[in-house]
Amino acid sequence: MPAKRTFALLCRRLRGFRVSRHANVSVTFALATIPIMGFVGAAVDYSQANSVRSAMQAAADSTALMLSKTVTDMTEGQVNQKAHDTFKSLFPRPEVENLLVRATYTKTNGSQITVNATTSVKTGFMRMMGFSELKIAVDSQARWGTGKLQVALALDNTGSMASVGKIAALKSATHNLLDILRSAATNVNEVNVALIPFAKTVNLGSSNRDQPWVDWEEWNDDNGHDFLSFLCNRFKLGRSGQWKKRCETSTTWTSASRTTWNGCVTDRDQDYDIKNTAPTPAIVGTLFPAEQDSNCPVQLTALTNNWTTLAAQVDKMLPAGNTNQPIGLAWAWQALSPGPPLNAPPKSPDMQRVIILLSDGMNTENRWYNTQAPIDARQIKLCDNIKAAGITIYAVQVNTGSDPLSLVMQGCASGADKFFMLRSANQLLATFSDIGTKISKLRIAQ
Image 1 (cartoon, rainbow, N blue to C red):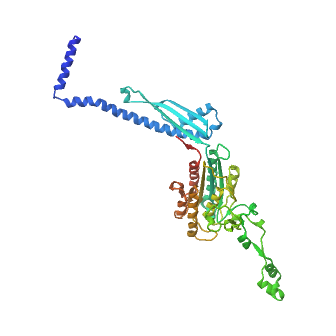
Image 2: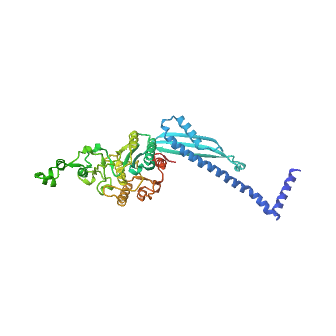
Image 3: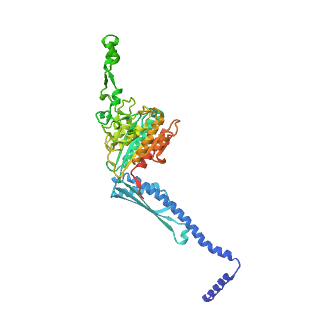
């Protein structure tokens, strides 16, 4: 058929469709189905691509964090190979093609690792519209070394920690936490930790006996002997004669030598017990009262990055005595405070300060009280003052018995996400690991 006649026939057919009233809806629907199916297909393809993108972003974030722990010792080639291998292990998506992972390590205003990943995903429906694949790209950065971290661990060493494996679990968890914090530091003095074991008292170390900030008044009253009374009793001098009256009415109290002090101190005078005021010999209330506590815990450790020393002190921890959480918190605050007695470095604008309080029970005894309520009242004020000073508090209650929720510990924490109620000693390891990761200097920047 000649082309001219064919064209004329087509025109007549089209005019017929235009004026026809028969089955018009079916034709219109059939024609409209084409773009509708195209949009539905595009939505399916884009949904698949977004799923891949989300998985890639998570893998990139994790890869950046993992690389940040070891990148300083790698060559450029090793960094890229490690990035590729780590990313692939975290991103098992066989449907992607042409996956490319690159990592860049820079040292400008601190350290930074950047991970870039690109790939493509084959399309299904969109292929019919001329788009055979969708390109996907993500990136992530981990920055560190631009700030400092100070952490004080106030750890319950009371007698109840001896039950159901709590002290052993605490030691293991603390060692793991120290490992996390140590690995977070790439430069000397970037991360420092103080260890404050506590019971009713805290142990400063007997080597501090000559420091002007130790108050000896109560210790002298409680530790010593009356030599005249000893003579009267030993030789029966008070039975009759000139010695009788002297033995009955006179005392010659002699204080014990300070060399016998075991290093323990109790709470300061109120209200210095809830403050970090530096001790001043002229103001007796600011001094730290010596006490010869028979359940004196292991000596505290001021801020240090000597991880060997910290680990050794953790191993020495033993459970004994009653619970006085405020004294543990007070000395954790002292450990983060410049000046005597523990002489922390001055706070800088880029410094993060953290206290981790762990206890397995309610407060039972301090310098003034042997009931919970008044001790809790002091602790609430103390925690408020610590947080007002810009220090973050994590609180961990290890409740392996039938104790109620510790409202005072919950209130001490700097937010609901920073309080942990544990029902088993076995949960300590994971909890300390979680806290260590959160307070690590490493962070996802983008």
